Structure formats: C-alpha cells, structure tokens
Length: 169
View 1: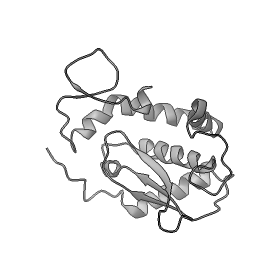
View 2: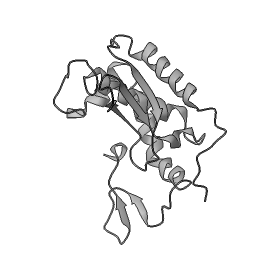
View 3: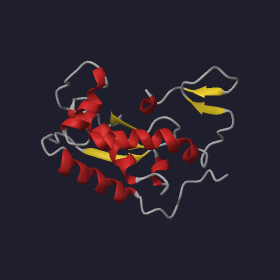
View 4: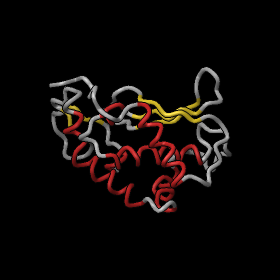
C-alpha cells in the first residue's frame, strides 16, 4: 500500500493557485478581495477536505488549505473545485476574512449549499457529494490503513467508526 502522495502530478502549487484564481474570477467576482488570499496543500486527512484560516503570523492573510490527497489523479477536478468554492463561501461570508460576517456560524441552516445554488453551482455541490460518498474510501485506502473503518451511519458493529462526513449528512 503506497502512503506517498503522487510526486509527478501536474496538480502542483501553481496549478492550485490558478484554480483558485479561475474560481474567483468566474464565480466570486462580486466578492471583494480585501486582503491577501493564499491557497496551499496541507496535511493528509480522512475527513477534512479543506479549511480557511487567518495566517497565525500576520493575521491579515487568509489561507485556504486543501487536502494534499487532491494531487492524486483519481480524485476528479470537480471535487477540488467544489472544496475551493466551499472555502470561498466562508471567505465571502466573513469567516477568516476582513469581510463582514453574515451569520453566527459558518454552516448555519444549509448556507453553503444555498451559496452554491445562488452561484449556479448546485450541481457541482451534488456531484462532489455523490463522488465522495461512493469513491473517497477507496482513495483514502491508498494513503491510510483503513482496516476496520467505515464512514458514518449504518447499524452498530465492531468496526471503528469515522464520524459521518458532511457529504453523508
């Protein structure tokens, strides 16, 4: 079982930055960029696809971090795009950005899915959710020992459970 990430993937840092720029230009042109926004690959994770935070050093730069497993070409680009749109939604709603915060909690009342829909991206949201539900465990198996794991719900069993990820809610 290979635990190393794909080294010869074209999905490098430059590709990731270009993807963010493309998404911002095509879908978030109405959102002012009031600070420096960077995107980087973070740590491998089973459940977390991405996050946004303020840089702990300068507290002015917003950093979008995505799962480095996304460099694996078995993960479709639409899954990565949807993850970046999700994090951009947090930015646009004032979470870890200088913009005014629009609600108290970042996922209040299905706000993420509504934002996808308002930007004409609801099918992207649904496609990502379906792909993750049916394929994510197989991809994770290339990087983690998944023996005894199952994702979320189902009947009680002796298996260790990973908490239900957002795409299975």
